[in-house]
Length: 272
Image (tube, rainbow, N blue to C red; front, side):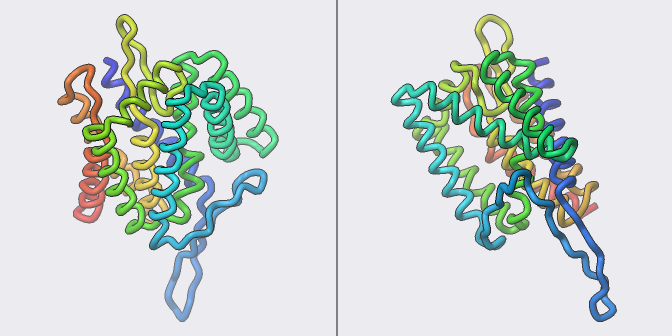
């Protein structure tokens, strides 16, 4: 039951995230020298938040660098036990991502206030249902920032880099396991967290959701809704297979398996 719930939440986060990305995506067909060309533009983010100005072909480099820096800072926070710093960082991140996500449904002011209330409640109460509910929208807000400057090449390289790093960090240095345990024990976990049994938790990291959503988001902007949903469905199936085969109470680097799901999904889109 817990496995099924994690899988359902993962796919729901993908569908909601794709809808948020689509809300910012604007396509216009123009005729140039008798040939119909589709121009893609992106709606502005709320309150003047700027997307990084990077080249699509090499955008995986600064994104991966940001991942390494953020992980390093979080590891330092954990080691020094700066719980207030983690609480504040988590709150601001959630508030920003939710504001971007909710902007699709509401005006800027309403989105900002609603996101702030949800972020504060998430950090203050640390209640699993509220936590997982907000997680459904967070990654769509994040994807609305990153998908515009990623293309199929750069997002594929990014997934390969993240997969290699994830495998090393879980099976090698094991610092990713320590970070996951730290977040889980503070009940401020970036990702889905489902308590069960006596003091047990099933978790799925936010990176596993976010990076695969970036891939599906790029498919959405280049190939459309049907293809992106197909890819997300295959990624979800890859997650299900991993969770079913995994041993209990054991940490696994999910990204290598989910990345394989991304590429299989892309292959199926081209074949079908």
